[in-house]
Length: 87
Image (cartoon, rainbow, N blue to C red; front, side, top):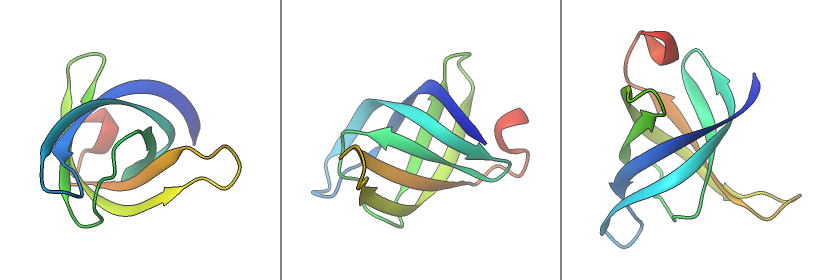
């Protein structure tokens, strides 16, 4: 589902350093999301997503790319909580 809402993303970047960064969810499903973020996050790493409401979700990065159309860095994540966004 196309959306646009802010998130805080925490994890470890490609160089192994911890990060906390602002991101924007641009697509969500019951089990995952596509997030625009300015950090190079490795595929397979675990991140914590914090919604504006304060809810936190654990997720695994299952894709990372630079968008061909707008040049933004994006990650795909699979939510690790079985209740997903609405739990």
